[in-house]
Length: 274
Ligand SMILES: C[S@@+](CC[C@H](N)C(=O)[O-])C[C@H]1O[C@@H](n2cnc3c(N)ncnc32)[C@H](O)[C@@H]1O
Image (cartoon, rainbow, N blue to C red; front, side):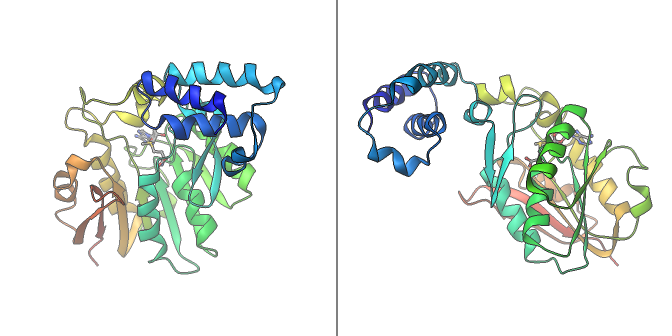
């Protein structure tokens, strides 16, 4: 491996970055405009790239998220634009999309609540052709990133600025939606999060009130209204909420909780009674 990357991995490890070698390699690949796998072909960083690389490694050591430095986050088949003002999509959310895709049919109508960068909505539009997708987001800054991603991917997602708790948001779709998805803010007030998250993900994307469930409850109320009888909902939650989030849906049918790829409780699904 490049000596500069070896040194950077040591610096990032000492700074408490969770995956120092991976991030050191990603930043080198980004600076050079290469894929990570091609780094092995180099002996040294080209002179012109070394300063820029050092600068980025310093920022990463100060716990700026890797995705803010590269301006991109991979989510399923998509390369999404991200940066200050929007939640960086996480790999654990991809499992919820798998569940949704297995149930969608061409012609279905989907609403993604708490859309952020548009990750869930865009992945569904990408992988479930013939499905109509709307996405709702509270924050203007986050919605601007979602708009950038709609443009970047060319995928047909209709964006709406709105509050999930507003009883008339998307009211024209009431009773017609086949699937509601949501990755709402769910960290309880006072919950511990990594430095990257606390300092760089927007507060509105994280904090879910005293018990973490304030927006989950608003999602449940919106889903009751939006879904057709027999329609489905899927809501992501924290790994400690594998019982409390299903309890929010206790009056629904087929309430189930699902693990992510690491086996931790990650999302709840339910069917609106007919
Ligand atoms: C955890 S992030 C998820 C973003 C994206 N769905 C994802 O999975 O990467 C939650 C998002 O919900 C938005 N949000 C928070 N409260 C909301 C509300 N009441 N109505 C609509 N969106 C809300 C936040 O601004 C943030 O973009």
